[in-house]
Amino acid sequence: MRVIIDLASQHQNSATFMEIKPKRVVEIYMLRWIYDHIRKDWVWNDDIRDRVR
Image (tube, rainbow, N blue to C red; front, top):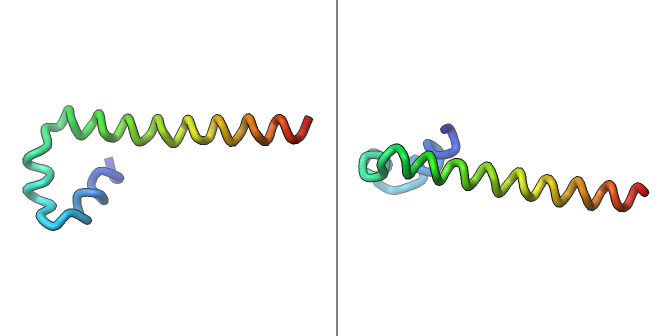
């Protein structure tokens, strides 16, 4: 949730930004962001495993 708040604070009208976006939409954005970072970690870890072998 902190990530979404940080993104909102960077927006010019952070209060209106949070009011316009429904909670469900914000949750979906957050889940997409988390999944993307986890997926990148998996790829990175697989690369390391291949190099170590």
